[in-house]
Image 1 (tube, helix red, strand yellow):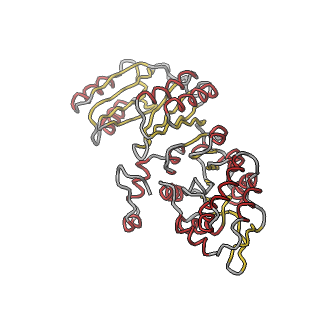
Image 2: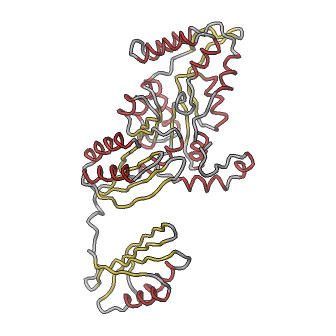
Image 3: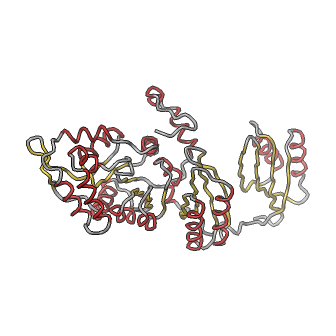
Length: 410
């Protein structure tokens, strides 16, 4: 850098309107000043624009900028700063906080956790106002493990979801999302709906409880529960499909991911008769689940082929990633149960969605709000970007699916 130049931070504030940036850059251009960096934020039509410039000694550019600001009703302040930033080579992290509401106490808890780990907040961006409130903090430096532990404590104390990720190309280049189905993509447990139709709901619930207490592994418990369905007419599967309830925000979540070019897949310990229908309805790229044996129009009580269990889900993730030529670092896995743990651990980002405590503790991050599309905010996607894309989609207008502010997403 030229020793004769001073590095000046020019801060312009005032009511935002078209042409402000152009006018200031025009003054700099006329004077021959060097522009090193610029950043702008607008809050409630109030502008803050920072320009980092190099100015020669005796140059009148600062006077020209002041006069330009006076003419246009702008406030300009100047500060001599270092020639280079000490933060440029330090590690950067992204902390995302999500809650039904985010009062000052909750945000103070999050920012205090960052400070406890010696992290410096470089930038704050609001990602959404509804159906949840979320913010993204870009953090420079700090001890990531100290921050992570403190953020977990703040999350529990204030009842909000907090995630910390290293800011990197991999975070911004996620390309494959693989989801569990029961209690993740949908609100229901398919085996329980089937058992209800078959008249054996209590028996199946009892077996499920034994599995939850570790008395049975997933495959054994699944085979035992399916055995109780023997003799049930295959039409029961159609009845169950009609009763399925998508998780709020599921359509918005999948629709947005597909627009961004993601591959979206589901893998389930449930059954293909349900997952194939969901894949057609939502336009998913892959659907993998267990296949129920049907003979003479009735369920036999057996599962065909290998059971998609805990290890099987992780294997499916790896297989789809290889087929789509997506590195595992660029994959996201979402689930709620213990049989999702291997899949969450295999993915570049494992997300526990309204999950059991053991899953929340093991996953990279957790989301506890009841909206699946809140996961978009962990990927750095803002709510207004989602809404802008929806407003430009004529099929959503025709189908009446454009969300109304303040209402749950579809």
